[in-house]
Image (tube, rainbow, N blue to C red; front, side):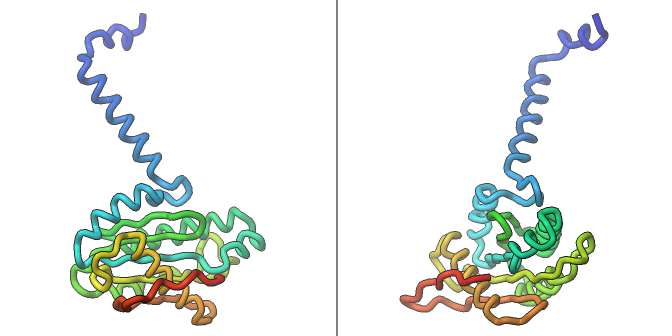
Amino acid sequence: MSILAELLPAVPPVIGWAVHARWLHGRLTTARRDPLTGLWTRDAFTRRARRLLRDPRAVVVLADVDHFKQVNDIHGHAAGDVLLTTVAARLAHGTAPGGVAGRLGGDEFAAVVIDRDGTMADRLHILARVLARPVEDAPEVHTTVSLGWVRAADHRGEDLSALLRRADEAMYAAKRSGRPRRARLGRLLGSVAGRRPGRRGAA
């Protein structure tokens, strides 16, 4: 009989349960993370984002990669994966500390950030420029990332889904600006009575 087998009976059951609980927690956390980018999955992001939206200073940000399908078609899925992981890392860094970022699916990302010092507009302009930088591990890939953002305080009473739709509207307005190879950043200002968010346009 091995030494380990001899020692196991002496281990109190509570320690075994503690080890199992830690293992289970690790598995659950992994399941809530997107396997490619490491960001929160849609469901996990939604739960955390809703908590942050209790703060009136919350800002909702939506981002996606312009012409991502073309990147995959021309350069291959490996290059596309590198692009997505790079965008995710930059977005997570740009919305920290105190924010939450997630991958909603495909090339679409979202974040909720608390604007504690009133500098969110400047921070997002910097983030947009950072997202527009070339990808070091895939220098042949040239694309842009469009951002749309909205302050929760400008649309009181709206939930996360509604705010994401408004950020989506701002993002697609930025896409339609037609500025090549530059960061695209759009913001939707105050709510307009009776106005509904516009439909998504073509990337």
